[in-house]
Amino acid sequence: MVHSHTCHTLTTTLAENMIKHTFYVGFTVIAVSLVLNWASLSSAIAADGPRSHGLPGTLAGILEKGTLRVGVSLFTPWTIKQRNGQLVGFEIDVAKQLAKDLGVKPEFHVLEWEKMMPALLKQEIDIIAGGMVITPQRALKVNFSQPYDSSGIGLVTNIPLTKTFQGSHDLNRSEVLITAVTGTIAEDVARRVFPNATIKTVSSSQEAIQAVAKGKVHAYVEHEPITTFIVLDNPDTVDEPLSKPLLETRAGFAVNKGDPDFIHFLNAWIVSHEADVWLSSAHNYWFEGVEWRKDLADTP
Image (cartoon, rainbow, N blue to C red):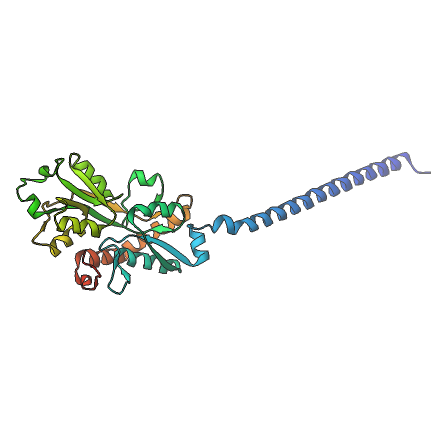
C-alpha cells in the first residue's frame, strides 16, 4: 500500500514535470517562431539591401557601379576643352583625384550651367564639381560639402563704350547693357549691384566674352580669374576697373539629398587634401599660372 505522503509527492512531481514540459514546449515553439521570423526578416533585408543602398547617385551606388558621373560646365580655368577635345582644368583634376581615391572611374558630363542642377536632381549625374558657389537657396535642393575652393565675382568693361564713365555707378543705368551667364551667382550679383541696368544673360562664358570684347555690351560680371584672362587677351578693348571683387564666394561639391555617407566622405576628402596641400597646389596651378593656356582650343 502506497503511503499517502508518497502519493502526494508523486502527484506533485508529476504536475511539476507536466508544467515544465508545457513550458519547455511553449518556449521551444516561441524560439523556433522567432528564429523563422528573423530568418524571413534577414532574407528580406538582404534582398532589399542592394536596392536601397545602391541607388544611382549614392556613395554605395557609385562604388557598386565603379563609375563617378561628374557634372561640369565650360568655365576657364575650372573646365576647359583643349584643341584635341580633351577636358582639362581645375575641376577636372579635382574630379579625377576624387574618383581615384574612391577607386572608381570618372565619367564627365559637360552641361550648360543652368542644366547642371536639373541633371543632378534627375540622377543623370552623381555629383556637381563645377565651382558651384554654396548658397542657402541651392542648399534647399541639394546637399553641399564643405568648401574646397574660394573665388570672387569680378567685373570687366568694354573700353570704347565706357570711356566717359566716371565710375562703376555709371553702369547702374537702364541704357547700360551688362551680361552674365544664366543661373550663375554672377547673374545674381549683377542684378543686385546694378538693379537699374539692363541685364542680358547668355548660356556660356564664351558668348559673354565675345559680347564684351566686341562692344555688344558695356560690361560682363563673372568669376575671377576669368575677368583677368579676358583683359590679358583683349587689352585694347576690355578693362578690369575694380581693385576688389564685387563678392567673395565659396564653392563646394553638390550631391543629392538623402545620402549622408556621401557628404561625410566628401568632407573627409577635402580635409585630407587641404592638409596635404594637394588642393592648394592644384588651385595655384590653374588660377595663378598661365602656362596651361597655350593648349586651349579657344582662348577664354
